[in-house]
Image: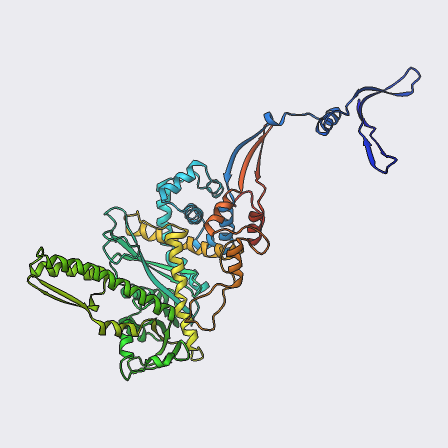
Length: 576
């Protein structure tokens, strides 16, 4: 039996093309004389094309199976985000960076990649691996890892820390180059951490013990080293560790250190002076600026009549270059903040005055205690003159003091040494402002991407290993953000302003991105974390088709396809 297609095509008198559909089921046979004959058994023209196609296959001997009963999707697991991070890590040689191949390295590598795509506590990460809810664990061979295995891998990774940092330094910090350094802190859960202490909280967690850590990067913000400190360590004390790391551990004798005014203090400058080949870029504190701006000093407001920066010299800073900058936007911000704090302080002091006037508050010491609390709350006590006595209280603004401070609003002075003579004053400002890249890294590690906080480990070594994992995940994330920038709102072509003191401006391309929410090729733009979430919907499915198990990747969306184009490889079915 066979199916004949006898459909007829013809043109009507009006010129219209028409088709008469005709499919016949026929049987071929030979008659008694041996001649070939066809017998029409049925007219199939009314059947849909799919039914006719299935009947053709059946007549050819094919076995037809009901798709709904024979086709089963056994598992569908998020895959695209882990695949993207793994491919980027492979491009960076992250596995080799960690150390020799071993079980501990596999787990440490999985911890870093997991931190980049799904930040969480170690216990949460192990449960995620063991649940089978990710392709990452099975492909990297850690799906049966226990918490003891993870702690063992952390201890192993910590033993490799110096070697890892040296490799990163050789790659990103060069002899005669620039090293950026800054300090941050994170609060601690529990009361047993060996390094936990009360200190200045950069997280705004008052009354919580914390640890501190310093991050060393190249000028673009690629992390190269991280150090752990007790929670009450001063910035300047921590900076000594960075100096030792760069010169003793990394072997770089000629390096320019860049840090903020709290990091590279006068004492640390003297330490750097004693080191041959060491340079620095930092900023002066307000009292030092006031000295330079005093009558007859080199820093006079007339310097800014025609430009926002000027280079001066002073005998108190021998061999250093002082670049004075005035930022009008910063001046306005400081003026507004000071006015707000003064008004808030006056409001609180008026309440104390009302209590004294009404006779509810008479004791001189008690009046002083309440005034002290108000002054300490808003930190502008130096701008008020208070007179306190038994049953008497009066206050007024110290206008001369306020005017003197306002005179220097928006002015900051950068001090530098060891900078090549050919570097212009504007170049020194740009070098100092590159500290913004370290701040970006801290935001990546603490808030946006890696969720370092809070610290849940107790032992010093485990806390340090946790920080190292987060630093390496930040290193991976830095490169992922760069390569996936065309699909995010990241400004890919930041303009270099002619005036480095002026506030940064986005490029026209970034403005168009933000306005249209689309890339130049019309693809939808995402925030970086949202893009990773979108990549996670690119799933690896395990399909059972009539007893045969198949692994397939879901068809990528245009954005997902573009992401892997940027990574330079097709979507891998498995992470190898």
